[in-house]
Amino acid sequence: MGNCINDIHVEDFQSVVSDMLMHNRSVLDIISKIQTSAGRVNRAVIKAVTQCGCIEIDGKKQNFSEDASMEELAALLSSQLNGKLCGECRHAVEKEIGGSLFYLAALCNTLGISLYDVILKEKETLSTLGAYSLR
Image (cartoon, rainbow, N blue to C red; front, side, top):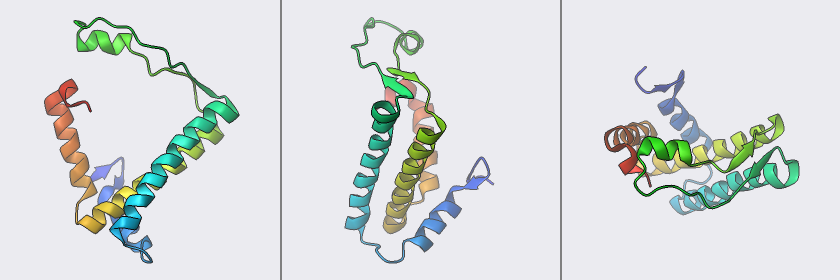
């Protein structure tokens, strides 16, 4: 159960992706599909703003003190998002994020990388370095 995220086994997901991706295992195709999938995630969020209106983006400059602590910054900085995804938009965004996860798992399979190990290493990096690890 160590490779489990809320009863979903990452390795099982990666295995299902491997089984599903039979017709084209080209690393070049997978990389281009990752890019396309990321665009589809962005487009789903943009549609929630521009077509549905369930969320709004308030993209103003965020002012904060250079000497503010991390806790103070967390309280001062905003996601610049107002509202909440409606059910339909949430479904669309989740579907596109799922597609992105599919192609990331496919790339991991192609390169012989464990997606679970990547998640663990990233979690360890975040835990160890905290805010200094932010990209």
